[in-house]
Length: 444
Image (cartoon, rainbow, N blue to C red; front, side, top):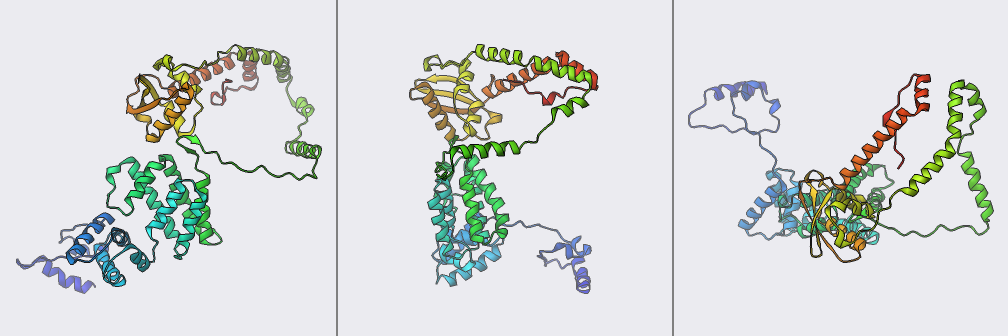
């Protein structure tokens, strides 16, 4: 109250020399400015779960109370940065567990989910096994969990996996189920980790809209399983049965229905009405264009026939100069294709091909891409090769840089050709227009 603060103010102004006042509050904004101005303020930060778990291990060790790391970490996360709350929860856990602390009892006391269920679900996602995924969810459902909290725990697991893949030394090795987290980091690519995290994050928002939380939880994880784009940079092929066709429907009938539907999906345009509304000069230009269509088609065919086809290159003839041609002949995509396009081939030592990836373009790179590129080059050259990729400075043009340069050159050439075309010039003159260069796309 104001009166109590006023009474305290005099003591704070002239404190006894042998007295030190320590005040603690979670609402400093409620204190009068006259009190705050006479105190030295320290803003205490929340403790991390790792720091809380470390101190609890020390306390329980001194008290000789048996515990497991999973239970300590569960208390550390539930304490939300407060050591006082952590010690209070520890007392409750000791009483709940009959003089000891273990993860199952702590989870039951807190009403949370045992971490092993969450880790099993993430391992099932990593293995792309729908059967294992639904089985793990069914086991967790026997505990009557809070599915929103379960989704939050899954997000926490993928967050820790992402840290392991990027900065491994930043994650405490005493973390619960650390071995399983390392296995996940090795088995799942970085882009898949980001995909799983994003899908689960958005799915958590949609849980309340599902008919029930379990079905919403399952659909979110099945979506993450279905939308996983690639393994080691290669597309995942999911076989599906061919659709059954009613034997009573004849092929001719199906063809007629298909043609009719295709025709009805497009509007009918009366060219005569449009022609009557056009200026005479524009009609003349269109007639000239129609007359030159056949000649243009013939010339395009001639150009395509004269273009040089890429010839397969033997391993003994493989050099840094023809790496761009080899890259263009490799049928790889997704993240592996991007990583390969940002690499430069340097040298060969026996059956090992040494590449360097540009420092500024290695955000998607991980060790699995070495294996993927090695498998692709083994299939291309017809003999076993290994690939070593290291980060460094790209001193020459990478395949991606060559593609960008050639695309820019083709675009500039196409723009120049259009600007020099007499019909385009006449259009620009008649309509007082300009060429939108961004809309120009060269025909490869």
